[in-house]
Image (cartoon, rainbow, N blue to C red):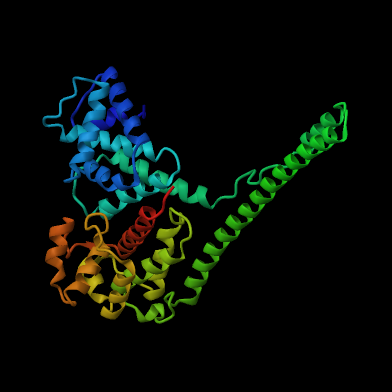
Length: 362
């Protein structure tokens, strides 16, 4: 059981005895073990006490009731949020694509603190720690990244085969054939691990090099605009998109917030304290937005991808501010809300990474 599970219950003014907590955590482990990628959005909505998929809510209740028949489903909104938070914490305890998606989904739905919805900060902290630690682990070179070709074991194997009495030529060939095939299999595995390790190392260095050259060039990734020709509101979207395109591994680099801030400093030496969401959306050229929305494809889920949804709605209405009403209704955020430029850029960047996480199996 997570060491802070009881505290999460207390945070929503619920108190459970030790036996009940153990039963609830067993339900959390069951749910976490069978969680599917497609269920992550609903799970995170339950955690934030937002309208969600009734089927997932029923699954949570059923899992809790299977472990404890006294579980009451009437007026259990707060307990559902705790259980959903427990599942999120359980999932992000170990690296996986679902863990990436869950952690990024919590961050995106939170919208850099713009969403004033109930949440257990302890669970949010777990997801932030996961993203930080996983971004470093994914880009680190393991101490022993290559499968060892154990020469001593192979020599012993050959010696043991050599000590077997041979009665005829077929027996001799069978013994030699078995040894050779085993050596070839182990050598092939060893070689494959070297190639995979080398490929990963080169990809890590390529990601780092590409990002640094992007910043050094002081131009958008498509080369159409110099950073200094952008406005800060516009650069929040351009910079986030460029950095996401250059990111090869999920989650993004640990230094992503600093990289986005550096990009904004290259746009203007003095970055304003705040920028409005509507200002950033409207500042982007319509032709650029149209191309981007076309590349993004299907309509964006409003609450998980609020900034991408805003751009899509802006294109749909042909520019102007007409998109803001639909944006506010669908996302629960305020189009006129103001936020630091680096946080807005990070929100857009995380939304793009979340899209990738949802499209990746395994």
